[in-house]
Image (tube, rainbow, N blue to C red; front, top):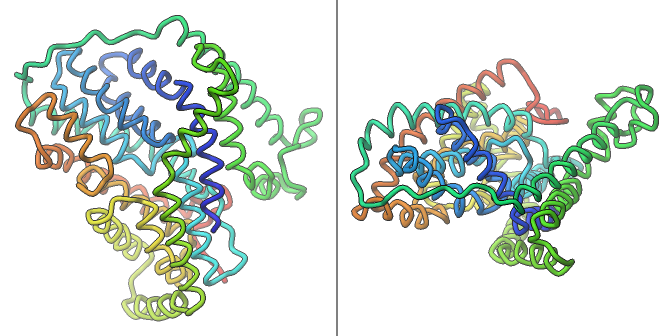
Length: 431
């Protein structure tokens, strides 16, 4: 089952970066050093970036958003809402690839092979769209916080007092310097490896053998092995930070970080077992093909265009998220049905996946089925003893609506321009 291996490998590297403190310290620095007028934008933006790792955004950034807003004389629940909107509502936007990317790509690939047994979905298949979305979602989250949430909440009259926000200590600063040097060196090596062979001596060692540079990039070991690069880079950066900050003193600390990341994947492994059976039975019984053909014929008879169909699918994914929280569990069920169906209509699996990710993200923040929803309620109760599920939903609903509108418009413009949504990821499938 393709997704299992890639997720395990990626999580090992992310686990080292998270356990060493690199991710948490980096997010704290980003928020603490931001100008006051950009505070809301930076909190939402940092929230979006935090979903590269599994839980650091929920555990660290959401409560930190409330603390920072209270220290700035603003309503703490507004800061909490802004951070939560970025972490959970912006789940399908990022400047970096995270553990969810190879997971969903693997499920999409298994589903696509119902129609085309050789089809390959690369984990970076939605990267261009995700990258651009990051800035739109951060701006939209800032607008909602400033124009809707803060005026609605009014002045804070609770009993919580502003806390002193701890600056980075000397060890953390040294760790970040070590990490920044390794980040600079690793990116320089990657750029060197991706430059055309004739430009710099020994360059091009990460490219494919095709004469055209763009084709060589799309078929490059770098893209094919992107999961291995996520593991190696996250591990090196995390170890460098840990050595500088003193959080990693031996190889045992590295192993503990990797082990901790694996300990969170028990439920995912159970899901993989049943998802693998589900996909295999769809292939074996030809149910996937039957659903795809019959569904495609029905949709063709409706004479809907590509854009209305994709909007309808986004709404379906958003609705499903209200009843089932796990992104991978939903996609394990929906992918074997909708990816083959849409492939027969000319949609690429990568485009179908990006539609699913939009729908899944926008209702994360108002779905009580989301795994961290109870934790968010607990955070809010610290500042409002009468708060509950309804309080969270009422404050997060404007984000959900605006994110849906912004993402839908962005995708429509993307489709009209005919832009690829990621490296080697066209909008159309040609059988």
